[in-house]
Image (cartoon, rainbow, N blue to C red; front, side):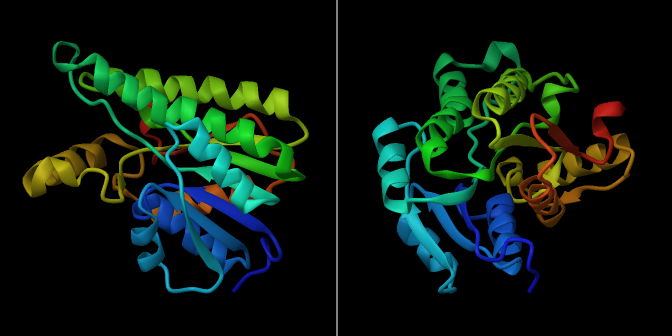
Length: 238
């Protein structure tokens, strides 16, 4: 176990799997007390059998739920928002409801988390949000994701200025084997991963643990703020 987060409290908001789980594991391994928060508290509690990890309930699309979480948790050092609701598809297949859900979950939700936790986060603490490579690399079928991720990047910089000296950064993952692509089915996921591996500079798919390492860096580097870290194998350059 490391020491970079010894004595710190880290709040990780997400569904408890994939990247959110990897962030929780690495924060705990570095000595932090971790509060995992999501819509299904029972599922989160069952996923972690560790006295240093507490489960809480929150719905990031509900301001009163966010306020209640902040009140229950109290003082913290870092807040990581790993929530998402992707509105994938070409323009002719996109629906207003899915776009609004995506924006509400990934942009407004983290903004309200920052609003509620700003007064109770240590001055040398940080917020970490999640963007994504579609904000930098335009692909057909990712319009809804691109505009949401782009908004997260602007939100990150704006919050960094407004909340200083509290630091605010974002992580922009590429194609990661985190479970997020399971809805494509086995063959669809295999094809997608194969294409992504051929078109990024690393020539492979990333792991949730590699993304979690970037989150750890964003939390512990005290001279980093207003930055979106691209963890995409160079995909934004191809």
